[in-house]
Image (cartoon, rainbow, N blue to C red; front, side):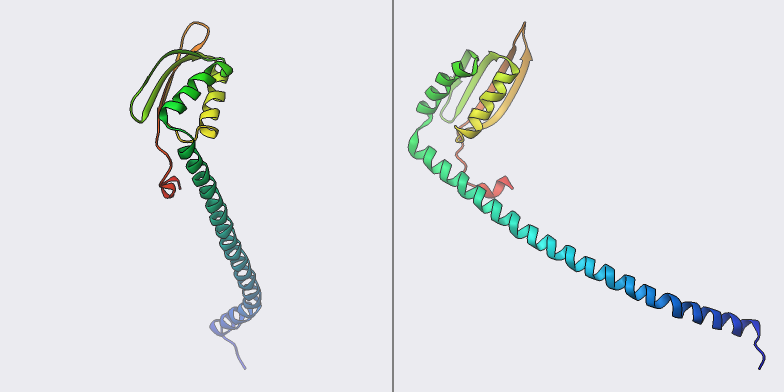
Length: 158
């Protein structure tokens, strides 16, 4: 039985394929199982994220409802102005409208950061609309524009 080159080449390719095919099947199975594990992890993480989002929204809603019953804009403005001294900030000027409060402050950068943290945590009914910082002699000059927008549409946060 004589083999010509073409038949010999075919036989070699078939033998190589028989060796490669099982390895490829094993690798495909591994990739498939890894893919399933990753997809399950993604689904689990999405559930955890949704749960945390719902808890956060509930927390914000509870704080907002408490803030609505607790005070109005005038009381909040008076409370903010009284707290300025505890943050070592000097009030240069302020103006307020129906739902807006503009503050011009003088103080250190660290003091304004503490004050902004206070506004976000304690006075969560205010939204910081604008913040400008300008350097003056030894301190910084801050312009802070707050809007009294109680968070009612939490879906837009995310």
